[in-house]
Length: 362
Image (cartoon, rainbow, N blue to C red; front, side):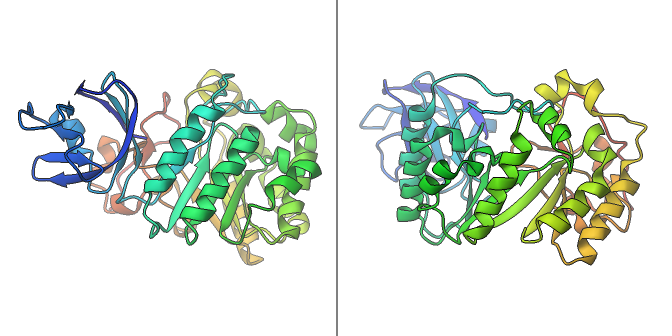
């Protein structure tokens, strides 16, 4: 999400509100309760305001929902003009994937994030088409996730919900019985599967038994008619068995609604373990092409996330999606003259290493 900092005066507690912009000023919750401006405010009756630099103010739009802290730091929790907004559930996770860009933080943050999400859900417009649930590992939050889903179902009954999860706990029948009462056809669950070989998957996520539990979770979702996406992060190990994995999905998971092949974000564990997860000399494009065409021939919807169009060839570009979140999206100097720039996902502005050769398409 986008973060910024300004000079914040007049309020000692954290504040979550929706922005109403008028000229060069913004009001939270459509009142003069708190004013946001690039200039000093002298007419605010409540004497509470946030002064921002022009660059930070320019990031705000009508209808945005922000989380403001007494030290002046703010986070945009919901962008009214974007389609990749999410509810963040926790920093904790029961996996520690070797290429995870956001390694888990062992801190008791379930209730803190629930209170933020509770206020956020009440402010999100009911006309919102889609919103995500993410972490860390959302399922790890247990009752706090269930309460969040209950609020979503009440306040956003027509909004599609995309939950990003490793799926491990969905393979626990006791856990699944608890969560399934909150699930409905509006939910779309995205779960990673990194190999057709159990030991390889478990090695990548650093969790013994992860492969088997994830498969059980996928079957539980299928039996309850919940839409499923399989996510495959492209790295040295997954690339080596990519076609076998695609064949495994076709034979054993024919109910999946979508398969996404994803490029790496080189930060966190991915940066730490870079030498083990990426080989610049590996011709992954041909292996990716074989897998994509195999699934596509069998009618399984397939996409490519996080890989620029210039890295793909003419056969693969139609499968590419603009997948990188707006606050992480970046374009190199080679991209500026590219005729496909507006259709391209770009690059992660968070990545610490360059893994693709970028050129301008003409």
